[in-house]
Length: 162
Image: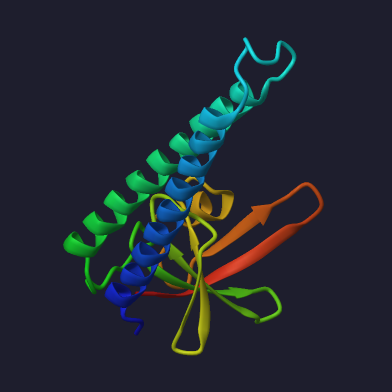
């Protein structure tokens, strides 16, 4: 059984690092915008405009990371190591492919794609809105899913839910 609190703390730590990095990048873009020539200095220079767009993008990323941090904190406080019998947010999920290859995932409402290594296994975070996450929602151990892509169909069996 995986220590879900430990995994959630690791996800939280990585999200906080990502948010801090985005905040530093936003500050750098802001400083560059302030130093860029204005319209009175150069009529053709669009640096200020471009930096402004970049600042807006970083601000959106910071807001997204902050939301994800809040959600993971809530999961940490509410779920902890609670044992789950169905796939839902906060579940550590073991899958087996059609050829027997094991795959491991950790479902959280936001911030897919974070790789966490625990107990000799690589867990990848996924969200309920991803194709795999949506297919897994409310499944139990032993249930099979078919995940269709443009070029293939993957059959996966749920082997564990922690």
